[in-house]
Structures are given as structure tokens and as C-alpha cells.
Length: 564
Image 1 (cartoon, rainbow, N blue to C red):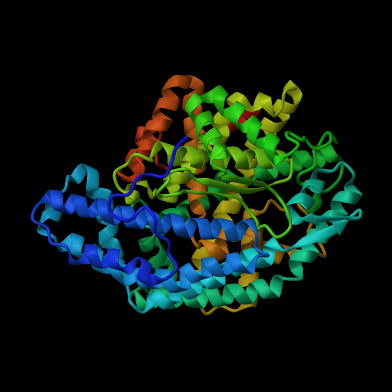
Image 2 (image 1 turned 90 degrees about the vertical axis):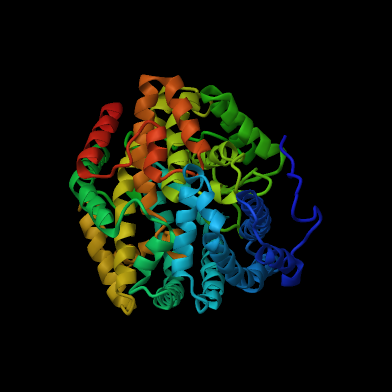
């Protein structure tokens, strides 16, 4: 079992109760002089140790708050760090960045090791603005309100109070009247908060736009591309991705829906999209969070012993909160812990097949954290999402090797696999739709709420199949973007899922040709962290960083063959 690393720069017992608890260490770094490249490397390691400590301190505050959104003390502990500590860190980080780049010894650092890191530092210097420090704090405070609002939502059904995650399981029920009733209860609950979420989003848009203006950008989209370090592709590449999805994927989803309508014997309503077309009851692959955990370890062991060890270690160190409950924030995540190297998995499991997919997905992120833990600097482990999501989405597909522990009957196994593969194809239009929506939102920052609804309705038609009847429920559809947490909390973090999904399909295709080699390539690529450009990391994994229409068509054709 891993333990907390021994510190060399910070004292072993240090807590962040005020800015004065950590300020001296920033002052120390800022005041140092360098007489050799070795001095600079020692300075980089000490800075990394400080950043790792602060990163994990914030991580635990976020984790505890999302595990219980009803506890206002936990919320205040998180907001204290966001409002009182981070704004103090920002100007020091800028000064330290400049100290590094301006050092004569910076040019002596090994290019092969430090190129990506220094490229990112240079970009941080370029976009930094003192005026944005209080805005970052305000944005963090406002964006966390989304989890508080949505995390508290529940419905009453058959005498039971259900979180929205638990209620969504009923959308697989074979009784159509039950599906309809639960669907409408969920949508009405969301609709009751639609105006509140619209107002919150309007405020976030204006704050983010001001950040961009302060940093010298025309709009937040262009600023965010710089902040995310998107050196490997441009907005124009995103637009090409959107067009490719419309051309290659939407017609295939349309065919899926036509087949579904034919099998069910009636036209499709929104509550008909998840039920089994053969009217079989929903699969229940596990009974509890503990059962989900145990089966995940068994599943991973069938792929690679190291993968299983990672999850078992997290269990030993209490780094998992898996079951859905009222007061818990929505969604799921794997939060890396920069200092102890053992991440935390948070999710809202309710005994569904989707929960299994979520668990192995977050498990892939966790394995990534373990594989990159020995890299020299904390910054080397901060991977862009295009790489991080490659780790998780590839694990979803590689996990078929061990899925018999969840689905011991061949019929159940094949059914779960078919649902998942179809789901991969079906989610791509949603990913492209959300991404295109964001491009419009932040390049039209003065738009009204009604204009936003109109544009979302337009996109819903473009990426939809025309096979689902929303008559009388258009208002639900026009606010359906609000269920996407990323729009509120992590803007522009979404197309990465689409890019990485293509990479994951390619990893799985390699796995079917040579299992041992594919796993070795996967592990080697993830162990690089972010010490190489994205394209080189993908190449190390034995795949292409490519999202052109022809490549998308090639990979989706492979998936179709697997389905057939």
C-alpha cells in the first residue's frame, strides 16, 4: 500500500488555515538565486512539492464537498481555499514562471524532458492578468452552485424518494407507462430549476468573457484554447469534427432508432430510448457499492494484475465513494491526488449497466494516475484531457475481457456489450453538439436566454435523427443542455471525449490483434504523463491522433462489424 511521500521542502506537518501558512515557501522560491542548472532543477522540485501539496489540499476540500453538498461547513472549507488561498497563489505563480523562463540556466534544461512543460509555462505567462485573479475566485464560487442545485434534486415514485440517478433506472423498465411517468417526473423536476440554472449560466458567461477581455483575447473561446494548452488542434479542427459527426455518425444513429421503433412496434418517445427492445428487464450487474468494487477488481485482474492492484489500493486507502444518495453532487469523477499519488473515485452508482461503464472509465483514470506517479515534477502528471480520456475510454473497451464477472450469462454479457458499443456511437453526436454549442455561446457573449434556447433547438435538430417525438415537450428538450455539468463547471472540456473515444476504439482494435502488445503500449503511453506532445503520446499507444471524417468512418466501421 502506498503512503504519503516524505517531504524535502515543506514540513511534514503543515495545514492551510490561512495564507500566512504557505506564503513563506513562495517567498523562499522567489528569492533564490541559481548558480547552476542543478540549482534550477532543485528549485523546480521544491516548487513541484509545494504545488502538489496545495493541489491535494484543494482536492480533498472538493471531494468532501461533493460527497455531501448538504454540509455547509464542507462547502465553506472549499470556498475558503478558492476565495482566500488561490487568489494569493496566482500572482506568485506568475512571478515564479517568469523567474524560470528568464533564468539563463533554463536553456540548459533537457529539451526532450522539459519541452512540453516549458511551452505550457510560456503560455501561462502570455495569458496571465492580475485583473483576473478575483474573477477566477468568483467563477469558482458560482460554478460550484450547479452541484448544490442539481445534487439536491429527487422525485417521489411509488412511495420512495429517488435521486435523479436512481430514478433514471426506471427508463429501462418494460412497462411503458412507468417509463413515461418517471421520465416526466425527472423532466419536471429539472424544469422547475431551469430559470435558476439559466441565470447562473448567464452570470458565468459574462464573468468568463471578462476574463478573456482582460487577458487580451476577443472572446472566451480563444482564451480557453490557450489556457487549456491546445497546441495540437484549432477551432477549425473542431468544426471539421462536428461536420464529420453529422455526416458519418448521425445517419447511423438514425438507423439504430428506426430499428428500435420497428422492434418496439410504435414510434419513439423520449422514454423509449433505453428500454430493451426485446422487453427484457434491465440488467442488474451488481447489488451495492461494495459489490461493484469487488467485481471491478476481479474484472481488471483478468486484463492486467497491475490494474487490479490499483483499485484494491484505493479501497485500502478509502479513496472511493460509489453509491448514489440524496445530497451527493451529480456525476462521477476520478480526482488525482498530486502528493500521495492515490486518486479518489466519486460516482453515483444505482446498480445499472451504465454504472459499470462509469466505474471502469474512472478506473482507467485511476490507473493513469498510478502509472505516471513516478514522474519527476507534479506538472509532468497534469495531462491534457485528450490524453486523460484516452486512458479512461480505452479501459471501458479493454474491460470486456473481464466483464463476465458482472454478466456471467453469455446472453447478458452480449447484451451489455451491444448496449455499450451502440452507446459509444450514440454519444458522439451529443459530444459534437455540446462542443458546437459552446463555440457559439462564447463567441456570442451578449446573446439572450431565448436566443440560446433557439440555437440549442437548432443544434438538437441538426444532431438529432428526427425519429423521436418530443411533441408537447419541446421546453424540456430546449433546456436539456443544462444536464451537462461540464458547461457550468469546466467549459470547453467535452470534445476531448470524442477525440479520445476514437483513440480508444483504435486501442481496442489493436488489443484484438495482439493483447500483450496493446496493453504494453497503453501502459507505456500513460506512464509518459504530459512529457510529450499529444500526438507522440498517441503514437506511443500505437494509434493516431486523428479525427478527420475518413478516420472516423474507418473506426466506426470497425465498431459496426463488432456489433454485427
